[in-house]
Image 1 (cartoon, rainbow, N blue to C red):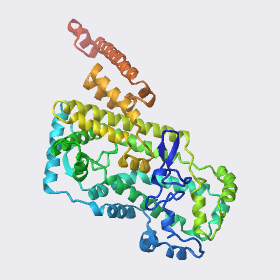
Image 2 (image 1 turned 180 degrees about the horizontal axis):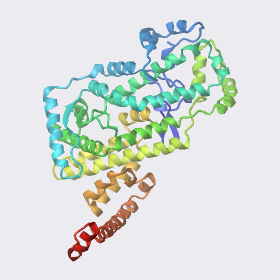
Image 3 (image 1 turned 90 degrees about the vertical axis):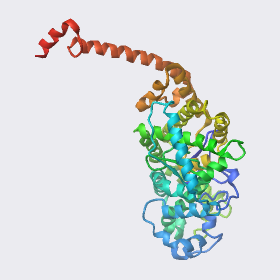
Length: 473
């Protein structure tokens, strides 16, 4: 799972080993140091040397001394028990349970939002219940969806790294090699837990990252985060809540009534995972050079020297053309979803919600600045949603309504082949213009088909009905 820096490079390689100093802004964060993508320094307790059996090594790691019971995890490449515990413990200091008043207010806001959206889109409601989640509830309720997304990525990373590591490198790792497999699930679990804890501090709804993470039919707001979002906006609390309820309800309409959308988003993530590849020959060529250039070289009995090897970038997966295509597809789909939501919420709220313009601008700035929620999503799934793509998608949906109407806009969701591609978003108005030609052609061919059916005796033919009956008999 690779977070992309679309300025030309990668800024983080969370589920892999990347070169040091990859993300200067995150240097010095707890649990991570330059060249230490998994926080291995903490895992080794800062030990600089020492050899022994895997069991002896485990005894020298403070974290694992407390979590040895989790080392027997057999539920997949990510230890989700540890991820859940890590996220919840991170949230504990500022956690606020939801109150009955908050649950009532959220349910009412979602009901009103659905009524307003009925006039803005052809798609019917996708919500059968409104829920107010605390931050902890958000983590617990969305874990199944994260598991479906992240497990294939983590599994491919482990397989690629293990399969590409030359035998001599494995031998140099000495006794540590015996516990690397066991450590993988725990390391991934610890990292995912930390990421989800940060994300839970920021998310406003169950669809805030563009993916449907909650149960089907559930519209969700996180009141504690909704209140934080509204701070400093000088807008009434119920207005902020209603604006976010409109966004959640709009997302839910798409995910409920565009049956292929969920699967397409998931497939794009999994297609990226299938493309993960590590060039074994490049590792073999670079191994000698890396060993020679590292201060102190590689000592099989020294965990810190192994850390330096892992942090050197030597084991970084290559991005394949297939992965680039999958990322473009995912980015385009997410931009189209977000742009459509902006379009229908604007249509529903502009004349009804006094603070809509200010709230919408705040949301745009939140996305454009790549806040903690978006950055964490990029870490987990490997994508940063570029604002440029979102602007182009919004242009498509707005122009579709102006030129062809609401029904024509929503009809583009009837099949994935009708949606604009990444190339179409480069020239969004050209795409919209072509829709008028396509609609005219469809109307013409539809009329011709009606004429054909009439001539075959399948329609109302007036005086020729007798001939039609004769053919039918």
